[in-house]
Image (cartoon, helix red, strand yellow):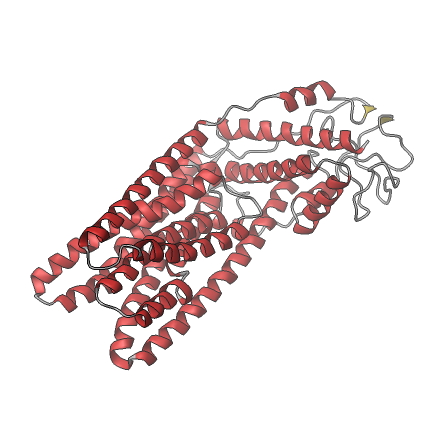
Length: 485
């Protein structure tokens, strides 16, 4: 029976207990052998016999066990269990000279810009233009009304923008493990601020008018729309942005953390525009400076994460489904994924009105405390999902290590926070920080692509992408070794 061999050009696996000699870039700062280092007592480039990689059980979490066939008949019919292609077996030869020509070809190969990337940038530009027009119309309407100083509009817009920046900052930190493409992040913010906010404003206003015409009570119309209608309208309009992102960029929507990132940015963009409206409406109604400070504190400080939380829950649910079952089930799951966010949204809108009506300021304080507790839980959820993402990356890269494409030491370096820090530090010491960053980024892409293969099946595009990323992995390793020599 043929044993799986290490990839050509990836170097041999050192025998247990042996370590590379110190110096000349042979070890990383923590004493671990650098990627592909030659065993002790063997000069780099001298003939070496490759050995079969040691199998390591990376402990696939039960929640994401996609190693079995899907249960759905429709999915089973199109599903093809995708095994990892083993590297070609090579005759005994120089460890890093076997694929020099191939490595040079891969390194010099120019990857064309994917069509999906072009579409994403175009869509981001269109949505950004729509947002700019929307804000200009809002400013012009405020000035033409002539009820307040026009300077107040940009002032309150800036205050609302600060809240948006806080949300963006938290999401950028959460997205550090496998950063999402910039155009997709822009699409998320612009969708929430332009499309979702505009659609919700039009529908909510129309429904208020309709309910008022039926009941003759302005208070009843406002309460019903706020507590029952607005949560459904707003969470659906925001959630459709997640559907668009899933269709436009499936490669970048691979799990619950991705869904949370996109959902939170959509919610943050929506809250940005909505907060401007709330602040200015209070001014038009004759509110004092104290009133303005209070509403800014409630909406822009204590309740800053409200919309981000609601929509991110939709994204988390869709991300869980897309990771385990693939694209189509995730699109279907959208029909129910919005309801947790709708429930929390309705609880906040309706509960605030009822508690203030029954208990006055005390009721409002109770609702604000609950909102702060909700925000704390959301931040804890972010921390868990970041940990979960890194764990799954390690598991998926472990699949390749067990077939010989990576060493298990490289998995530790590429798929743990500590390993990445050590790898970057070592790369800086040998003058190759950019190569290491690319090595880390493309290895994360490889792990994500592996998960898509398991969830969606072995479609030709995903298999071709896997082959390309494996070539890039080998080329990155070879380039690092060139710096280390």
